Image (cartoon, rainbow, N blue to C red):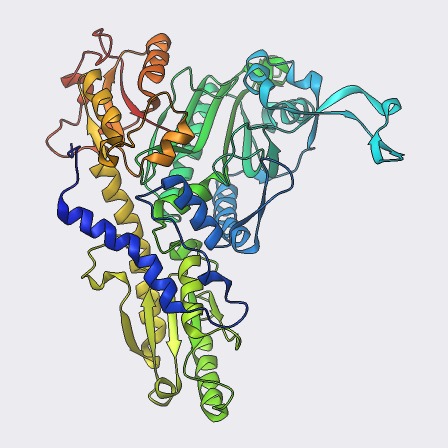
Amino acid sequence: TQGSVGRRPAQQQQQEQEQEEEPRKRKKAAGAGAKGEKSAEQVITPRSRDYSQWYLDVISAADLVDQSPVKGCMIIKPWGMAIWELLRDEFDRKIKASGAENAYFPLLIPQSFLSKEADHVEGFAKECAVVTHHRLKSTDDGVAVDPEAKLEEPLIVRPTSETMIWHTFQRWITSYRDLPLKINQWANVVRWELRTRPFLRSAEFLWQEGHTAHATEEEAVACAREMLDLYADVAESFLAVPVVAGSKTKTERFAGAEETLTIEAQMPNGWALQSGTSHFLGQNFARAFDVYYQGRDGKSRDLVWATSWGVSTRLLGALVMTHADDLGLKLPPTVAPVQVVIVPVGVGANKKDAAALVDEKIDTILAALRPDVRCKVDDRDYVRPGAKFFEWERKGVPLRLEIGPRDAVADRCVLVERKSSFVDSSSSEKGEKITVPLDSLKQDVTDRLASLQRTYFDEAKDRLLENSHFVTTYDDMKRRILAQGEDDDDDAVSLDDDDDKAEDKVASCPGFFLAPWCDDAENEAAIKSDCKATIRCFPFDPSLLLDDEHPSDLLAHHPTCFYSGKPATHIALFARAF
């Protein structure tokens, strides 16, 4: 779908104005309330006005993270950690099913280890934090580094664990009987980022990193692809985030890899977010750390073949941006720490009999829903129901269940779904109230949660397809990227701006561009310099992003590079990226 670029029609402007006013209306409806009702105090900046601030506001309103006294780091709060734990558990289950086992390796890595693989150290050298001393000493001003405690060899705070793990593999692998060896680690890593943003870029983050050793190249290549497919499946089925799978250019490969595979997600502003990678490492690390195995014949001695693969808390950034709206976070039910929040209404200190009846029905509801549905009863008596609705809406809980005295007498309750605010203002899709009998509640809740999961994915997939284009000339792509700021009148994006400033100004841009491409690192760099677009990947199946008007074999029908005019070697996916 090509889409159009230019000034918005009056009807669209009116709808956007209504969307911008919606959060203010909801805040007013919630009311100031009693003490402790903090969630009504912060207005979320409309996404159409300032994308970057909208993202930060959503994260803050949902209570996901807090600021750290260490620049570039973040404190993940309980709600954010609960989301990560659900995602981590889903990955962990599937990773173990693939044959990998969990282990843990030291945080500190001898500097000499990184020097053993030249490409690897070059890729990470500028991001490494270095430990040079092993103690402090007391001074009149407090404490200072003890100059007599200098380490014989500096230690690197783990930016990734290939070197430490392959040093260990050298001791663990001696024979073909030890292969394949598949190890996974859940850990934190430190990469000294200059420009940070919660979940997307931070100096320290949480992640999973897998490392495998194989007897043959074919086994290692197959493992790298298997793990990428696993990542894509979790992203789409669990997070409801559609992704494009493919391979990276040589320029974009992981340091020390023979090939890097990636899943790329498209965010609502049209930019790409790398959401998981899997690397075929060849024999580079085995050679650097002398990891050989004895063959079945008892005589041959060969280097093993390797892979590594990982995802991180960056996926939480993808989750937030893909589904959130101007009302706050929206969580797919599979990854929501609370899938149903139960809010008693119409009960107070002077209605003890009514409150007792409502409590009795809530116990019945909990017995019906648990343990299959994650429920929470919000019975705080110092917060008004309206403020509770507002708070849980911002936290992204998929379903709200309201029950009052009249409902309790009639054996019924009211359900409200967390729908998108980015719909026609006259639509009931924003979350209408639905009365449900208690005797059918379990089935109704289960069906609605499944429906919401599909809806969230379908909305994101439709946006991806709508904002994916096939181009045959570079000028066409460049024109559309340069036009991305025209809707903002005089606030158009300048290519002299850095990526963060441009992102702040743009609420939407043309998205993903598929183009015939002759692989050339110099031309790749020239395009990045000219219009800030990069090759996100060579998609395994680019036709999945296009409508039926385009042939399934794009390269056969478009054999000429859209930039150089040379014979095309790939179909490349270009986009601006975080």
